[in-house]
Length: 210
Image 1 (cartoon, rainbow, N blue to C red):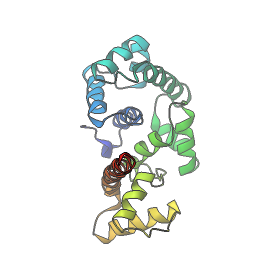
Image 2 (cartoon, rainbow, N blue to C red):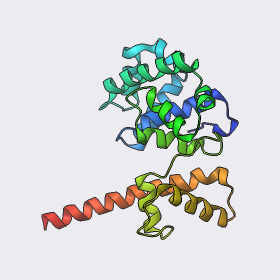
Image 3 (cartoon, rainbow, N blue to C red):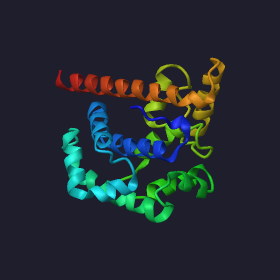
């Protein structure tokens, strides 16, 4: 998506935050990317620009990107979230991270920006911030755990997410990879987890029909 998170610049981090909010809804990756590109095309890539664009303008952008099913709800969500970000942190997510006491507090502060931010959105956002923000230490999602079990990276009976994270990081390091790129491994597991869940759902449906 052309977002340079490694720079640590507030503008780049906000771009990923915006994309994460869009990814947080059950909608196709293609539609999310197209919609983000529309925000980019219209230079609506900051909290203030989102507020200045207003509800009607945001709906137009969302519809142009194909985000039609959730356009009204998402426009309202974006306005609420970015108003809170400006009011509480001067529009800078870096301030949110700096003010947080620990990794859990980072997650809670993100969720407190608006009721439209849940565990899924926070996990998506912080997954890519690992290695950039010291307190970005989100635990593995259900999809990551599903894929890790299926791949034999973790025992079938292990459910402790903190232990699972440590095992996966150790596995990553054991392959000679740097921890700051662990997000790539995690993202790959998410994609595999999605495929596994989809295949399982299709198999169950087939069994029911037959």
